[in-house]
Picture 1 (cartoon, one colour):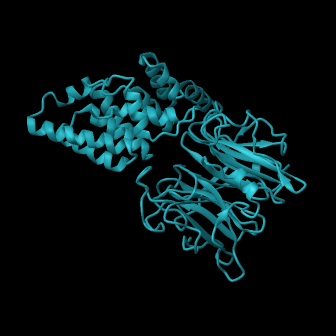
Picture 2 (spheres, helix red, strand yellow):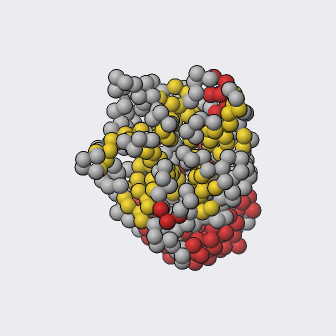
Length: 477
């Protein structure tokens, strides 16, 4: 029995919801299969007119494609689905599989081409066809079509659990919000790609500038990652490394970045988060059998010109360190200049959704227990990145769980200061798009934002690093 692609898509979206599920994906799939009867009619239709040898090859390829997809190996799944097209060029099920793979790989234009082929050849090729059409059209800002196919999926689906798991009420609200916001972009905002010296055809994200303005730190997943390996337990892309670039004051440009940073990078996942006031760095690590899912570390740069070996954040204060790094997933952290407030993102079960924002505050010589940020900021979705501005009066974060969203992850900010934050304000278009804006850093003067995003302008492939003029927001007025 093969695992239907619509079940794999359902798992990815349902786990995202508020209920905390920590079982491996394939185990969850088996549990769900015990409650649902697999619809095999589509596969029977696929093989019906094939010769015995072709049928055997196609069955193997389809099974392999499902397996690769369920493992997050979308590139190999894509190859198998394309082989199926060679056997049967008009097969809608294979077209749907190709569209789903391209969607996961962020190639939405190709995803659109193949999902429309699937729909043309057989509108019932997959239970999730209308949903996937809505997703693809949303990413491409074809919002009227996205609304039509989300609603069509809802009207024809007999699974209320799946409709809830896919957050369709939320997505329809986001489509409506995007329809209004895209009509009134802030034309004074200038978005500039930071260039081919920093960006590659792989993903670059999580930029941060040192307090003296001399260094740029960011994360990327490239072939020169330490160890040169891919994450076979997640998405079969290269493990992430931290890269550092130095500002050339004569040429007025950033130098070629390097990931040769002593013991900063490992053969697993390492990510940049932020600089502290003394230019030491806060980083993320996810090392199999070492960290607990994902933890936050820090490292300093010595006078001898070498980076120290990263240690858990505030390792000298073990009590505080354990308050931040738990047995759950921690992925982002930002600290005020006087270290009186530490904001971080965690997946611990006391939150509203997948990951939420917490903080600890310093009183005298001790820190509080982690405090869950107000519910008007945290959602049942995913708060991905947090950044506290050096002035302590502006909080930036990214989220995909708010109705006031142009689509997927958007960037928001709050004013008012610690323990008195305003309602989140969407930074609007063109900073937020129907694609993903997951990470942000804002300069001390509040005039420049550095974002890792999927802007179409001059993209080198994947997410790139962008410099954005936000001076007209008057954030520090």
